[in-house]
View 1 (cartoon, rainbow, N blue to C red):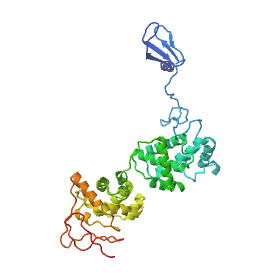
View 2 (cartoon, rainbow, N blue to C red; view 1 turned 180 degrees about the vertical axis):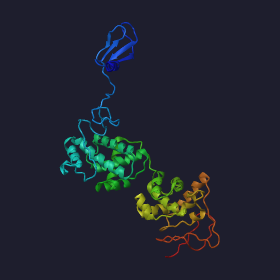
View 3 (cartoon, rainbow, N blue to C red; view 1 turned 30 degrees about the horizontal axis):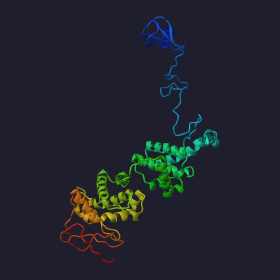
View 4 (cartoon, rainbow, N blue to C red; view 1 turned 45 degrees about the vertical axis):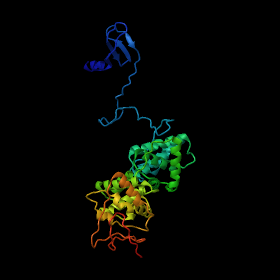
Length: 397
């Protein structure tokens, strides 16, 4: 009897409503038949009411609390067409997971069979591109939200039909590059091309063409401009430099950009040259080869940007505990002197912003930098340096 009263109380529930006949405010919902009944006059106010709540029943043998009692499945994925409902099998474990029934019934074999038979051709093509985006994201340590945005962007591109003639590797890499630009993650086309699984996608021009076409087709106007600060934190972290060194690099790169002394150079090239220069000044030098390995740019490209920044070095560094005027003055120089103009641009910028250069006045027996083509030399004859930009003596090799 107790159990019967308990089930009856669960089946009837009072809700706040009004009866149209007696205007009583107590309405009872009978979940057993789906009716709403007035508790005063007994009139049926609403018949066959559908319960929109969750069905708290479990059909699993495991009665633990970890079992999800809902019978409904997950929400439909926005990444696929949604034209059909079915079961998707994913691989479990490594390549050697053959299972008790042999190789024909391994998880990888079942997954391939499921993709061939259960998925339509449109979703199968999307799944291949999503796998490529997933691989690039995992290799470059890109967050999941950026990976998801790249996948959604790829679906939009395929629905537009503007890049049907291009290989999905190119389009997937271009979508990943656009997603990182929109979120300010800072990945260059060269990095994304190196992380691609396709040999042809490693050619940057293929990804660049797809990027330009996607940008123009979808009218993407919210792409953030890549700056040196976008890359410096990640590059310094890979080279083992702490946050204080990153702060100095950010300040040097910002001044170089404001002076406009690195015309025609990409932001990633300026960032690499900045790290190469700051590392020497703080007494923790790193080779150009190591910087090239981390940034993905050639050593000659880094040294070319370095040569453009070198004449204005006294204006690039601000006063700091880790930066000395002597270390800035004695910075090495690689290659032949560049065309004049960088020092004049730096002086105009300093006069406009009322900034003083970091000047070092050499005393007796001090050394000054020399320029010798192809060699890095820091010692030489004493010369007077009464002003910034002292004339450097050219000596034969």
